[in-house]
Length: 187
Image 1: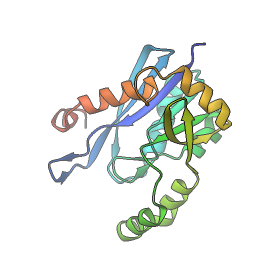
Image 2 (image 1 turned 180 degrees about the horizontal axis):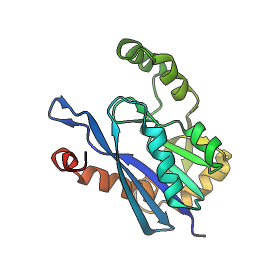
Image 3 (image 1 turned 60 degrees about the vertical axis):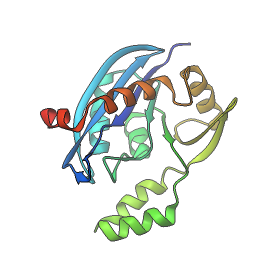
Image 4 (image 1 turned 180 degrees about the vertical axis):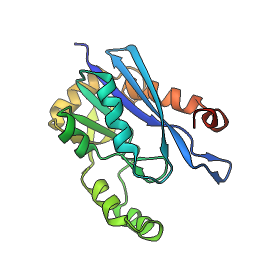
């Protein structure tokens, strides 16, 4: 069965050791394994505008079966609130994490860098990540609007190479393909 999926990924936000002010945010819409659309915007590094930008991508994408996020933090600690996206769109959201976060370390980092650290920590805590097995692949996911079994079935349908679902893999390729200097052209 073909699924219409929006996957969101960010681009680089550093050049060497220099932190950029903004990063590219990429949204990829795929119907099954067919690329339908690509959205490009920018988000503030360590800002709080990524959720609103993601919601803009959702409204541009039209009818969707699933929204895929590559984690919760984008462009440093600019967090996408998957719970808010699900509540505002009624479209299920699956966050694929590279690893289970060490909440104590995250909290320490937030406390030292942000006056609004509690708001940011609350967004992270809403996404209770769990391990999910897709045959021989183990993923860490946080799911909004689906059961784990439903998420597992959907992810199997849209994964063909490696462990990342195809829409997220394509979004990552596009985002990583835009070097920071080219991103300056978009900013």
